[in-house]
Structures are given as C-alpha cells and as structure tokens.
Amino acid sequence: MTTPRDLIDRLETEADQGADPATTPDVGIIMGSDSDLPTMAGAYEALDTLGFAEQTDFSDPPSSRFTYESYVVSAHRTPELMYAYGETARDRGLDVIIAGAGGKSADLPNMTASIAYPIPVVGVPVQEKSVDSVIGMPTGAPIVAVDAGKSFNAGLSAAQVLAREHESIEERLIEYHEDLTADVAAVSEALHDLGIDGFRDRNA
Image (cartoon, helix red, strand yellow):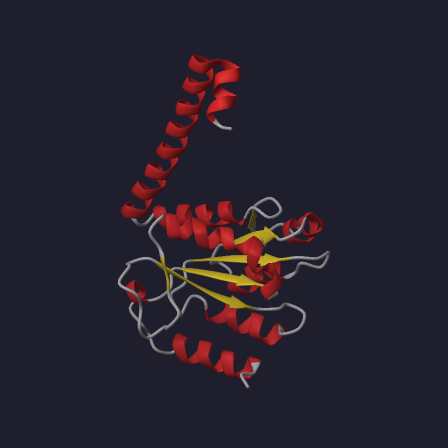
C-alpha cells in the first residue's frame, strides 16, 4: 500500500534529477480530496482546451510541449506531503500551481502558496464556504484566487502566467478568447434577426 512517505520520496527523487524544464509538468493541480475532483475538473478542461497534456510519468513526458500533473494533497491529513509538494515544486520544474480545497478550513491553497513561494498559486474554493479561508492571506504572502467552483478560470489563469514566457500559449489564449467573442456575436445576431420567439424556437 502506498504511503505519504512513498509519495514524498518520489517527489524528492524527481526534484534531484535536474530534469530539463521542457520535459517536466508546467502546471501542478492539487486538491484536498478526490471528492473535490468534480469541481476541479474544470482546470483540466481549460488546460486541455489550450493544448496541454496530462503528464502521469515524470520520466516519460507526453509529446505535448506543455503539460500538467495532479495529486491529492490534504493540508490536514497529510501535511508532510503538502510541505514536500510545495518545497520540491521549483526543482521539479513547476511554474504555477492550482490548488483546490473545500470546507470552512480550506487551508491547502494558502499553505501551498506560502511553502512554494515565489511560485504563483491559483486557489480554488471548492465550496462557497471555502472562499474566506482561501483568500485569507496576510500582506506579503500572496495568492491568486478564483470564485467558488470556478476551476476552469483557474486553468486559464495558470496559462496566463505561462503565456508571459511562451508565445505559443499566448496565441492559444487569444484564439480561445476570440472564439468566445464570436459566439456572443453569433447569439446577438440571431436574437436580433429572429426575434425572441424565433430565437426560442431555434433553441428548443
């Protein structure tokens, strides 16, 4: 049976490899429990939409240049694993971390932000009651946070961080945004030209 110590050893071994950053995960997605996955799935979707691939083997990256990984890391049940993840993040090649947690004591995002600093962390409150906990960082210990449940936006934010260094990601973000604006324009035109009844019939 895998233990937290096994995962810590894995992270530390990967950190010691000095791997080429082009072969390591660019984005880390962590969550406090696998029950958070339905909410956090939006982050995966956003990154997939932008051409990222999931990397499940540190030593055998997929062909995509930009990748992400994910782990379950509980701030309360496995704090030593949380510390190891944050402390090894830079040496493992991560450029940004998305961290989601639920409940009133959603400490994983802000604790990870403190440990992994200066790597940026995008916090996702999995529930509405988690918002205050996620955003409650003191001055000098920053965290970027999205609204409750908006993990898709967290994925986009992570890509925006990387886009400042990688033009290809910036181009993908711009293309995604242009597709959104085109969709709005198409809906606007249809509503105007068909009228409300015709528009409703079209979408029935």
